[in-house]
Length: 102
Image (tube, rainbow, N blue to C red; front, top):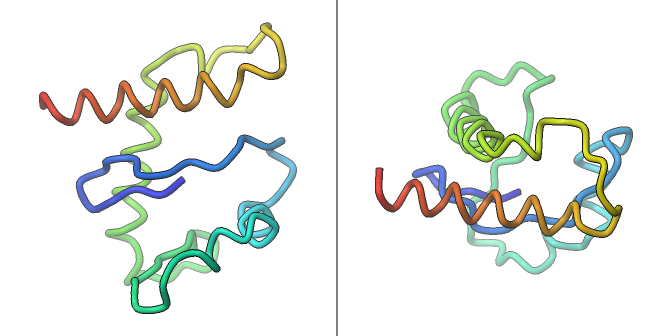
């Protein structure tokens, strides 16, 4: 997931099982190769304890919490397996709409 400083969701990748590390998913996707080198990128470094990235991480965490307001993302999903990406994108759209009116 990519968000800006105002917590607006700009891009989401397909969802994957939680057992796959985020960095591994990112490397397999090839997404970083499409972002120009002059664009600053802050990757999730939470487990490395790097303090200077904390402000950026908080913005992303707030965006994730905002998305989770749609309970279908936090409850046990009992639907068809091919709809989970759609639900996540809808939740991101609702969050972005909320930010427009907040």
